[in-house]
Length: 236
Image 1 (cartoon, rainbow, N blue to C red):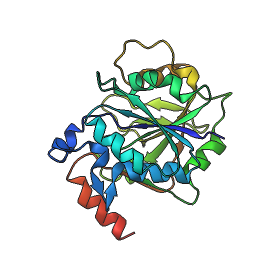
Image 2: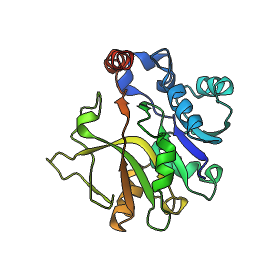
Image 3: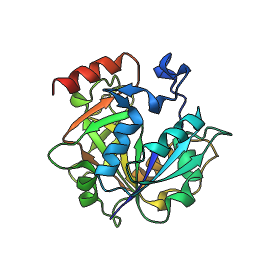
């Protein structure tokens, strides 16, 4: 049972301005509740009992919100107030709080709806620590709602991932949700760096895998995306 998750909530939310001028991006409301609460609801529904949340921008506001919106989960704060560490650096900073077992990691600004199976349970069934260093939840580019990019990964028949080639389109987009092994969280290149460093190592070792999400997924990255997402949710 993988029952610990890291929720990434430390970003500056620059693309969400002006809404983030006075509030952190995780607390921007979509469909009646903050983005963070959508993620917390999904984590709690998926059996997570402990969530580590990193904070930086307007950190006090995020912490105050978590005290009353933890969905019964134990919440630990990974404090990045002094310096924003990006995703990879944030994972290294939270390493001791995450423990020595595989864990989920989720972005707080992506919104997903379960498909036929509950998403985290489905990922647990596929996870194989003997073969995998990370398992990424992907969505087909054609179903990546409000996402403007050209895709992130190719996936072979066994689920192994490779990068999109320059000037090409890739069929899958990373949803912001993954399972990671602590064995990846070693040898940081600096204190500030992207999770891409860990993924590149896993790709080289043939140990980065993916699974296609069967439900809905929304990239809620800009103010313009919010009414589109709300309309799609309201109309099923």
